[in-house]
Length: 271
Image (cartoon, rainbow, N blue to C red; front, side):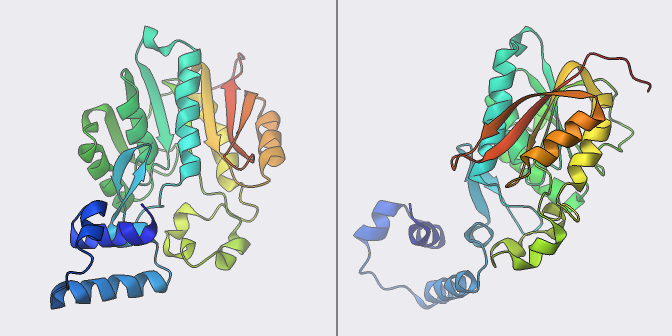
């Protein structure tokens, strides 16, 4: 459905076919007022997903509010990459532990828990409001029993176990601070904490790459989404850490490098 159809089928609580079959029916005052209010919000730039209070990701429904970043189609590539990587290492031999950093709406954690049979997911976010939405989405998609939610600033939670995770997955904030005010109106409705990646957009990559090795099992992977033209800088951060070997860069639907896969090197390090 196009955007207009999504709006009206949601507002009028009908399917697409009924929308057109009943196109000549007059709306009552309450519904007319609701339509007018919703259209005004959209014209002012508010994202459709926030107006509807929901969106679709990986074929699943997710509740969204202004407390969370709206899931993007590009992030589906991140989820697909995790699934593909697990398939390549024959993960079904034992349960896999996945750590999702900055879970937001929970779209990554919930999708992986839903689509993979033998995984345990830990989902972290610094925002309790975001975690509340993520927990709701886990319930909506019937995977609440497979996900542990923790409020924490990245990898600072005491409840996280060292060398416990097979994969750390994350879509961190990667927009340079100076660029945020130049973004289109729709994006500026989203929580700044989910956008602002610091002066050069790479602050979270440095923090995560610096400490992630401590939480990965032997041969574990970090799989990260990244922004436009950040490939070389992120590659340098990984290489300078000395902890990881880059396995692959995965391109998105526009042939842009979107996801990086890095494997923990086999080396001794001091805890």
